[in-house]
Length: 157
Ligand SMILES: Cc1cc2nc3c(=O)[nH]c(=O)nc-3n(C[C@H](O)[C@H](O)[C@H](O)COP(=O)(O)O)c2cc1C
Image (cartoon, rainbow, N blue to C red; front, side):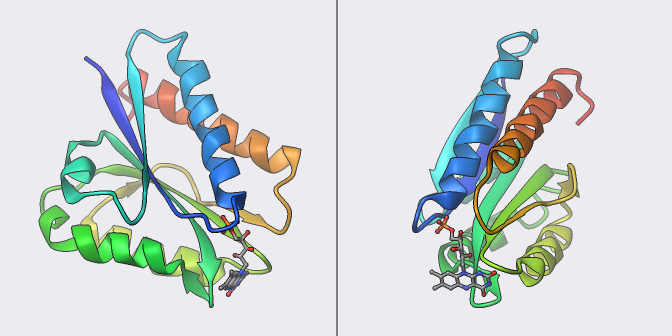
C-alpha cells in the first residue's frame, strides 16, 4: 500500500523551496529502491488542507523564519488545520525544516509547541539552515528525505 508524505512549505525568495526540492529528491531516490510506493504531495502553506494532513502518513513543514517566528503563511496553515486535526492526527510523524537568515531558534520552539499540542511525533531533530543554502545543506535535506522514505517503507514510523 502506498504511503504518503505531505510537505507543507512557504518560501518567498526560493531558499526554503530549494531545500524542499532536495528533500523530495531524497524521498524519490529512496522510494525507487524500496518495496513501498512513497507518494510525496508538496503543498504551499496557504493551500494545504486539514484533510491532507489527516490522510498523510508523515508531515514535513518547511518554513523560513520571519520576524522571530514562523512565516505568516505557515502560521495561517496551523490556524486553518488546527481544529480539524486535533484528536485526529495524534502520533503523526513530522519533520521540521527551518531556513533563517541569522537565527531560527524561536521558529523551531514555536512550531514544536504546536506539534506537541497536536500529539505529533517528531521524526528527526529540526533541520535548521542559517544563511546561504550550501551543497551541504541540500545534501542534509536529501538525506533526510531518503531516511524518511526508508523509515516509512520499513514501517519504523
Ligand atoms: C520579512 C522578513 C523577515 C525576516 N525575519 C527574520 C528573522 O526574524 N530571523 C532570521 O533569522 N531571518 C529572518 N529573515 C530572513 C529569512 O529567514 C531568510 O532570508 C530566508 O532564507 C528566506 O527564505 P525563503 O527564500 O524561502 O523565503 C527574514 C526575511 C524576511 C523577508
